Image (cartoon, rainbow, N blue to C red):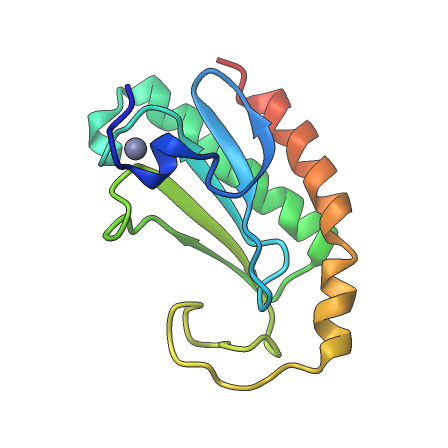
Length: 146
Ligand SMILES: [Zn+2]
C-alpha cells in the first residue's frame, strides 16, 4: 500500500542495500554519520502496532541485524535506535552508529552539535561503509526472508 505524497512511498529513502517483499535497508548519505542506516517497512504503515506479531518480529530482526553489522564493521561506542516518523509518518527505524568524538555525541544526531570532528576521523569511518553495506546485505538477507 502506497500513500500519495509520502517520501518513503515515493523513493527508496537512501542508498538501497537490501530489499525484500516486506522491508528494505538503506544507508543515509550524512556527512557527519557514516554508516547511518534505516530499516523501512515497504507498506505505508504509521505505527508498530499496526503490524501483526510476525511482521513486527521480522522488522525488528532486520533492525538488530543492521545493528550487529555496524558493531562488527565500525565498532561504535553506542548504536542509537530511533523510530520517530513525525516528519515522515511511514514506519522506519534509524540505526545510527555513534562515537564519542562524533559531531553530536552524547547528544542525539538531531540535537545540538558538540564539535567538529577531525576530517581524518570521518574519512576513516567512511572507508568502512562499503564493508558495512555488504555485511548488512548478507546478515539481513539471512534473517529477514519473508
Ligand atoms: Zn509511505
